[in-house]
Image 1 (cartoon, one colour):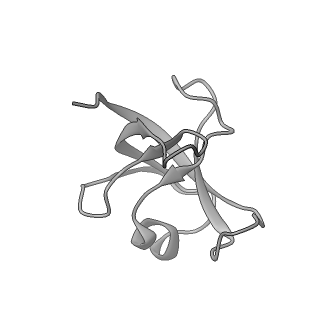
Image 2 (cartoon, one colour; image 1 turned 90 degrees about the vertical axis):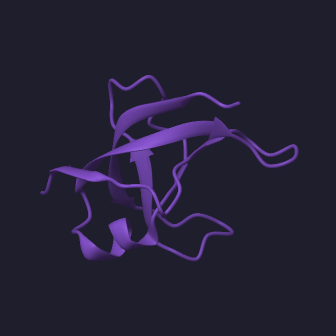
Length: 85
């Protein structure tokens, strides 16, 4: 069974190849995961709050067959708004 962690993440603008959204989510500086890691999570979080909003969410480290590791948080899981810009 995968281990889950509660971390603080933030939304940010970026254009990434293969991604349909320009608003992405990453861990904030000082968390146990680097800010360069992608976070797959609720689309509602990205759409309902301004870019730069910070959230506390449960995540697990995962990957897709041979892909680079990323953090996953189900869209069904609760999240807490920590700070808005």
